[in-house]
Image (cartoon, rainbow, N blue to C red; front, top):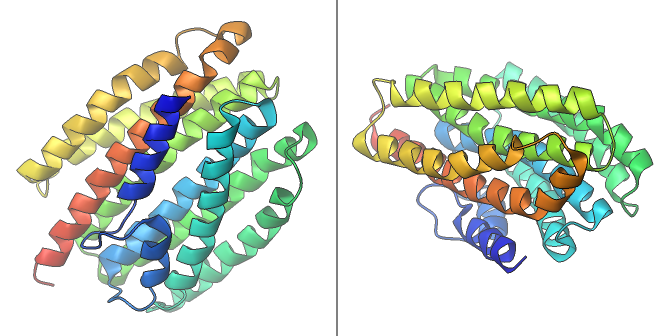
Length: 276
């Protein structure tokens, strides 16, 4: 549990957008007054995809008593961050498609948020299974809308790199559905699909002509964190063993997320240095 708390602390310290040393909450709120550009908007919208999954991961952990103190910290911090970033994105709506998709994300969040008011329960966990994917889907469409504002290849690369953050949390989410005896077969299938997507995206980033030496180094770090995580996720289908390994999966999911955040931050910094 101490190692998970350490990983959560590292992530909170590191979830800042490129060029800002602020902690996660100040970073998101500060976006409203900082210079918002398409690279930053793609990053923030893409992070909303991840938060939709991380919130449910933490909710399921809390409901099952898995690293409960850390789960509570992750849950509360992720909710605040989602809402702060949503407010920041409202300050930058450069196209009609962005305006429409941003409104859709806000509507999806309004369906999602009330379920978080009560103590975690299996009944609400069942509802989250579809609702969290609706929020994730709406956030993805918003991310694509921001990518298309300029059509710059680097903005597209930021968008697909940002999916690694979401996938890291989505796999853990499905794992914790299984440990709570919910959606065993569908969740296991989704874990495999997410794993295939995660590995394909890493290869795509590495092979991109935009991938600098720094980007490739960041990808290599994601790979180093990814290997033990995928081994823990897929070591066994035995639910007793899965429950035993749950704290380790929680810890590793945070480590992969932190590495993926650094990758995205590097790409955002690269975009902001380049002439537009």
